[in-house]
Length: 81
View 1 (cartoon, rainbow, N blue to C red):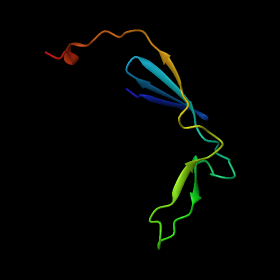
View 2: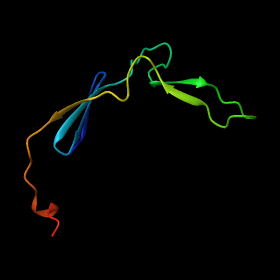
View 3: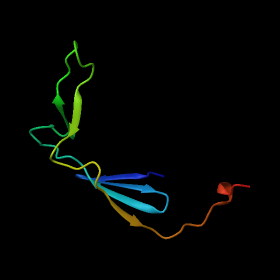
View 4: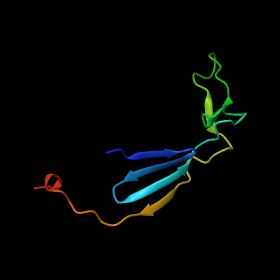
C-alpha cells in the first residue's frame, strides 16, 4: 500500500487516521530551481563548515492541511496482546 500520492505540486500523505496535503516548491523557480531551499550564507571552509540553508519563498515547508478520516478497525495482527 502506497502512503504518498503526488499530483503536480500537491503531495498527499496518509498517516494513521488523517490525510496531510502540502504544496511542493515550484519546479521552475529561478531562486531554488525546484529544490525548495536556497543557501543564505555560502560555505566558507575557513570559518563555516556547512552552508546555512533556508526555505525558498516559493513554498512553505511547515504549512500543511490536515484532513481527519474515520476510525479504521484494528486488524488482528495489530493488537498489542
